[in-house]
Length: 456
Length: 176
Image (cartoon, rainbow over the protein chains, first blue to last red):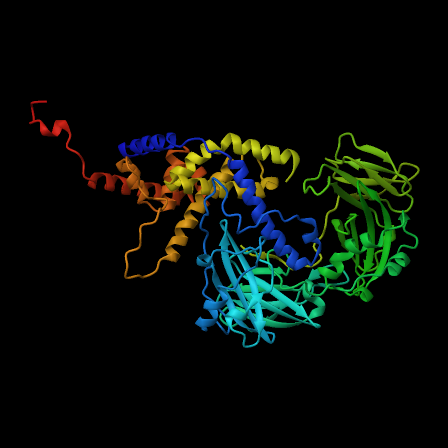
């Protein structure tokens, strides 16, 4: 070891020993988490509409609370690009809109003025839009402002609740009166392409066709039909590679609640449940489980042939297994659970989604669904339950994975057991003990192929 | 995060915060920034707690967040630079030397944060070159070169710093 290295170690030891034990670090971290979490919740509420606001008590103002003892407001990297959009050179407009309040009252989320930047300002869909970002508690947060065409910066009002933002490409949309508009913020020179919805062919394969859209200075503004907004995917290419492929979901903000796709009526669900096993399904739970077909894949109700295969209780939830025949003839099977609370809020879990080729008889399939059982609102499962629907003729089941394999009698064609850790698959047995089908414990297959956002 | 996971996270924070704060202090050179850096890193750890492979001792994750966050804060200061005809009031930066600091501490304050992070991980945390590379998400070659350059800079600065005369230097040769 050199003399410099020895000196360095000695200096580190000396200064490290001067550091006294921190106090209340856990509480400080938890306070930060709650404040940032609230920002996330507000962003999600802007996208989802109503339910989350009901469920989350607002106990403290993000701004007015100020830093708690032991906390130091830390800098984060600012948004790395200058303002863009048709009003980006209007300094008077920018100077005014950056001062626009993000909210009023004790619950307002107002980043300090000296941390705010205008990211976009321009004429969009017959009005003026501006996106402003700022910093709170070491997090970059953003909000949209809007005003009528020709409005000055001081006339712009908050359009969406503040939410945390990333500094990579961002995708936004707004929808009103049967028309939508998509706004993509990326880097100058990037190429933006849009796919309205996935294609699922007769073999059950999911693909997408993307069409290029005009991009000016890294900004694309695209008019869209309202029908498939939630199923669309945006791809951003830079140089010879793709830097972003994702839909309008987590990780991107939305303006306003958008348009909820049409869904099945109670009457349609009861008709589809004719011949289903188990208990009478709760239509609301069936609708929740079917959400991926309309939301992620963009199908309309009248395009699909729906069947409810089974319904029954799992923990505190109601579970269902359903199938739908797609226009291509491919068959999709979905399994999941829903929980309805007294205050009209809901909670749902998607446990199974599998695609099968055209001609598949869903009622003859063997389906294995693992349900993670949660306690209250906790995100961590306390146990898991396995729901198995055997093919016709099934009377018992062999759980694969544990050694030796465990055999369980079925309730008709249904098996419901817990806990199931270590179970990798299930065999269905007939009355003579012969194996008539075997399936692994399946999960949720991606039906949208929308992408996950930034591509590394 | 609820229940047992929450308790485990709390245990981890209580048990490891003193060591982590020392590392944060050596990375930043400032107590306030060190606390902020540690809390930011623990916040990210809390969010990822369910996905951490080793929940009993996720030190590597926290170290990584602290070291990389520190490098990010330096980049941000570079972005913030602007031209002015007035000398700015000196801010309480993370590298502000304090009374009583030794030459090595002052020399460390002049290193780029990433270079300083390499030295902290190698000579305080005693991580190997490979472990340091993993924490900083860079190549072993980068760790080697950053450590070598860092030590060279420190050596250069120490040798050029004014030194008090030592007793032996004031005594004629042969008289000591």
